[in-house]
Amino acid sequence: MLKIRAEYYLSFIPPSKANRVKINSRAFTKSGKRYIVPKDVSIKINKAIWELQQQHKNEPVDIPVSVKILFILPDRRRRDLDNIMKTLGDCMVYAGILQDDNLIYRQILEKKVVRGEEGVIINITPFDDKEIDSKIIDKLKSYKEKINGI
Image 1 (cartoon, helix red, strand yellow):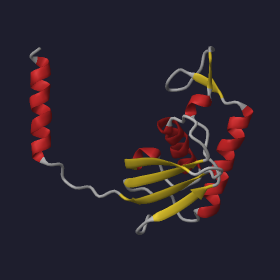
Image 2: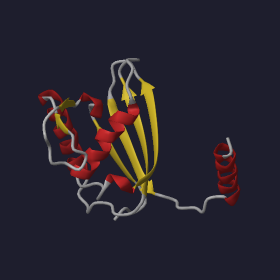
Image 3: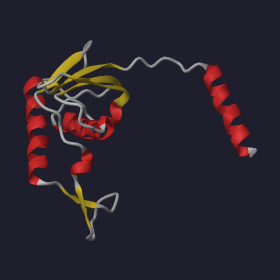
């Protein structure tokens, strides 16, 4: 169970889920797709899981959480943080930090370029489940009615 907050570190940027190669063959997965993960990508994913396991010795978190992730990048090369986050969410589950990555109710992704430095700082806090303002729901309903009338 998550007490107040937890902080984890990775010494490198995990690979993006886009680094998987789709293969055409019959598969028995939910999505019906099979992927080959290149060996170097697989090694980096396993290293990320290992680093996270070394820092987490408690039971997996089983409540909704907010996750703030700071990516320290060594250069300005283009990186898709959404795809990296997909890999990172899976790594947190495999490392036993989260029971399931669908418990991430809010995520804040930020990147900073620090020449020659690389890594990830992950902050996890309980999700503050405030009621949504009814005015926002009314605006959404109004928009839907407007779109449906076109």
